[in-house]
Image (cartoon, rainbow, N blue to C red; front, side, top):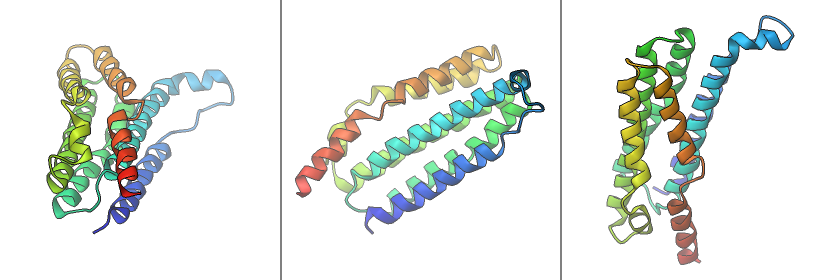
Length: 197
């Protein structure tokens, strides 16, 4: 199967995830800036979750464009990723409902950890389908950012039961680390485009 159908489906799912998150936002109980103050933690949590979804969409877009065909293992790895991303609105709403509770904050870390693992499994499936000499395999290298992200998510999950600020700092740092799209994938997509010309 060509990649276009998988890309279109994934884009639709990610658009629904973002829509669900924004629908969870509540309007302020007033028309002045003071009415926004109690909603500030909710808005910041929304911004962070939106940022993670946007980062995944951006890198996922480049990742799927390194594939020339879709196999069953790529499809299932992609569904695995979409499953974990679809839980981001749920855990975001849970944190909003119970500010200051360690379990929702730790659960956020678990969801992000599982999304990161499933993204790596998708990369592995694409490399397996296209070979060790493929542009993606060459572009990935040792993937230090991916490994550091996993370590941060594991640490943040554990730290949620000690201090609620530290996990949020780690989540933010991971987002900042990935806010610029993965240059390795961008180069692989450009190189793949030149090869097809």
